[in-house]
Image 1: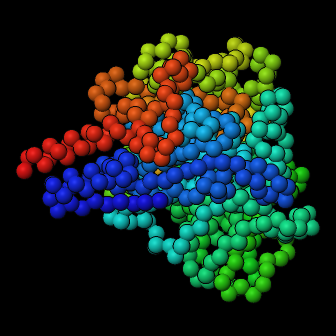
Image 2 (image 1 turned 90 degrees about the vertical axis):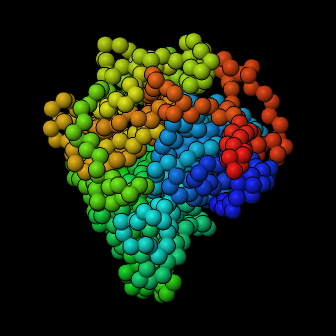
Image 3 (image 1 turned 30 degrees about the horizontal axis):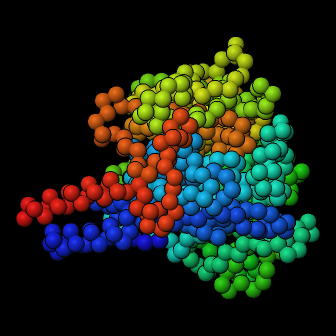
Length: 597
């Protein structure tokens, strides 16, 4: 990782420095600083649950390394695909302002072929918080390839709590000892995956808390000092299991989720659903008679049957007198009474007095006073057979990826690449079908999206390119009169939300980000089976200010595959690829500056 700041004493020195820098690095830059990373994805052998298996590593690490940036930084990530199949990385929660070209999903990007590389370039514009990256194709996230993203506040913007003494990142998730290819075959055969083999914490298996855990499994140990307060960032990067996170005898003070500061509330344990990210402050205020358990256990399932689906790590005080022992702590809420469990997500509120990425209060946006222009009810049902294959649906449509990504198809006038006829309501009169149907959303509209979960399992839904105000959540079927119970003052704004089985969750979205944006279930099995769609949002008066042009290194596929040139794999080519146009324009601008003196 490199962070660069440039200071020039004169225009001529600026020109010399710019030329030197361009020759050495080739990365793009603007007024804001940048960070640059190389991510090399490859297979390694690991045994997180005691069984040797093939996992996907980033730079040889499983999970991958931290991507660390600050508000408004430009981020450049050169991704080298050393797998044996195509790859895309997506950046969960990063909003990609005006730049869906970098989103890393099949509707917007051609995949990176094996042994090719591709440079992602985006700005974390007006964002702070905790996010993660992961593969979006071929069920690959089930084998790894994920890692954390932290976007820090600028120094001039205070955080709404005392500066922590340190940070600890936990990446938790359910795990199978079969790799993603084997799991794909199970789904392709028309079967469900069944119970996972365990839960990993930072790529490691459980501490031997009882005799059911085999000997020799490597487990996580988090080292802390007594009396200090740590910011704990937790991401559920698993396949399909909601997890309850807790640290024995320690309180979790919730402070942030999906890049927005929350009202600060203490919890003894917290349910984190697939694809969600949270920050807690944890003070090491216990005595050091022993270590303490860190637990991530399966939730909203038959927990007696799923006992082995539990991740256990160790919190080790620097002055600890001995190992942790005894039974694991249990969650306070009972999932057999889901009404009670729903009180926790309902308690998550926006911190309306805190600044976020900008100095204005986050709560100053009076979303409850804006007229709703459209309502979309997106209903999920249990997977069903369509044309002889097991498929998952939204509003009766199981999404089929367009052969040519949407914005490329628009730019080159490829006809029939997709349809803009996604229904805004479920229709029971039509049988479920495969289709390339998307939402034709209106630029600058203010829409209501209701996720109606008529499936049998807890689901998480994610919207790329946006956060949305989570104004309502309940059991039963959503109807118009439910709007009377909405939180129109301090609802949390986020990009991934849980929807209880037999329940609904409503969000409000201001459509100010032009592009093509994925709406999907984060449960990887349902996503793989087609439970997703896209919003196409176009500014009819586009003047080059509301959407970026495709990058110079854009990949071509589908109907445009003949436009794709072979990739030459020299280091110089890969570094410069995709940035020459921007370099030239920056150089011309600086030359103009020089000649004004």
